[in-house]
Amino acid sequence: MRIIRLLIPILLVVVVIVQVAVGLNWFGLGAPDPRLATKPLGEAQIDIGGPFTLTAADGRTVTDRTFLGKWVLIYFGYTNCPDTCPTALNDIGNALDMLGAESGKVAPLFITIDPTRDTPAVMAAYTAKFDKRIIGLTGTTAQIEQVKQAFHVYASPAPHDEHGKMVMDHSSVIVIMNPQGTFVDALNGNANPEIIAARLRTLVQ
Image (tube, rainbow, N blue to C red):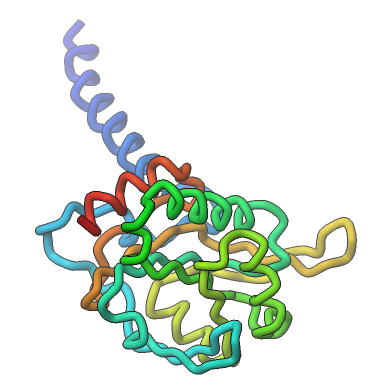
């Protein structure tokens, strides 16, 4: 009995650690940086984000300052993604619909992690399938590497799929920046439209 009493506190600590790890999605290849876990407003800001220069789907050059004044929703992915990217973009589009007029305060960005294949024209055609409000951004390999590092995004080539196409293993996170360009929150990439819309609604009002 004495041994059991001594083991109980240890087991409770282990359970808590496992629950926290699962909540922050630390397990699994391609899991987002733990610093991207949701952080309530009012707490110390996390060093996520920074200056970037990229090319929009319409060919114009944009920077991080282009979107100042709006709440920025950022998802990193690529157009040949078989599942997570199309699902996330579709959910983001539906979330914007749920926001109604408030969606005008949000700039949804889809930044490629595969700049060699994702040219501006490819990005334009791809984002149009989901929602015309989603802004596709690409750039040179160096530019994409810079923005990936700034936002702590994981991305790496994976084995080719059954059709011989190169696929990318990557973190799936929806990053939210405030109108001043400061990191505010991050949602799991598989968050449903209701969760995305609810979080944005608390911010944009």
